[in-house]
Length: 211
Image (cartoon, rainbow, N blue to C red; front, side, top):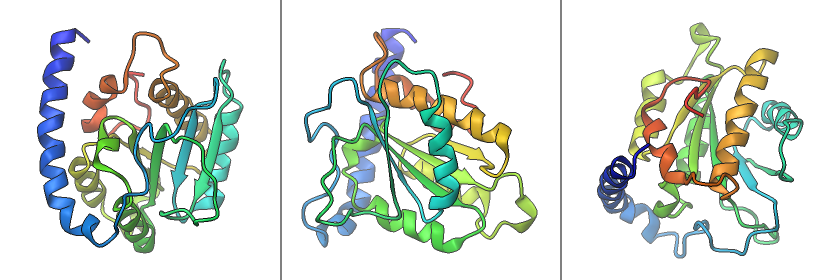
């Protein structure tokens, strides 16, 4: 992407984030200091770190296993959490990418993600947050409508991926772009920044072919 295009995307994103911050002020005011800010801790050497937040920990563990098997020059760190904020006794490293996973078969899962989002500083939404809709291959049994997830992703100006973690092929296909996104967010991809992920926010593809 040309520098001029990135500048246009960045300016547009800044405007959207200002609007997002204004809409979220009432949510943040009752929480005191926001828990997650990008670059709030020193990075570990050659160790990009991803945090996956969801009530569907068993399904996500399968995705984690696939991610750790990906051919990668870096040592990936993957953390799972049911919700945010993390317990006060948890010592965490710097988080490079947060993935909020919503089960399309659980309204509780959606509510959990919505509440956890309140703990994330708005500056994280410059390419360091991704939404994952789980159960996309079983639409007949969904209790959370696709449009609801799309609206959530658009509100927070972040990419949205649809997948079915019960299918081996989808697990492999999802692990690859997530590892690629993580490397970009951690600064391990020369010449590519998180701003390059912003155009993907309108993507509904489970494969993120642009990566």
